[in-house]
Length: 203
Image (cartoon, rainbow, N blue to C red):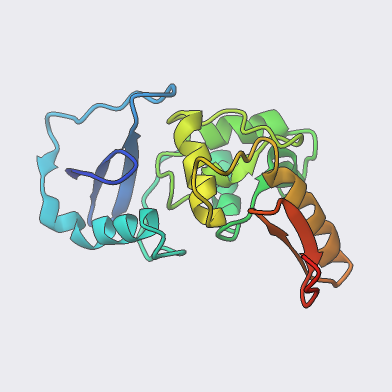
């Protein structure tokens, strides 16, 4: 197993993996419940991760929306199925744990989905930060709620100081989802905190 570590505008990042794919991505924020240790048997090899590092830096700089990385995440079959559903969440969108549970075939399994979310070994690339509570609360994040809020703000194209997803993001998402189902388009303006139909110049 190889590993590397590097600084970004949000926090230090640690990567570990081998020829089979990326196995771990740790956001070293100093917050949250996630504990991560570099094993003595791992080999420090920055060159091996050069392309992945570039993609991560571009994403955190707001210059990339998708990743092209081979993954080799370790987990139970259920966890892997949940992580696969997370990868279907588009950039800049949020869903609830209940939404994922429904897609898994059991709308009452929100807690199981949340537990699998918390075990995700490759955040950012498997975007568990795009999952929030049904009421819009950020709820948990293994690397701390502060960076989860920043990542959501990054994808929404807003500055961290002017954007509070606990108060506003889920409102926008609920209306976006309902309107998409009705075949209409609508978006949420983060500056004015108002929503409008595409083509409406009244706001």
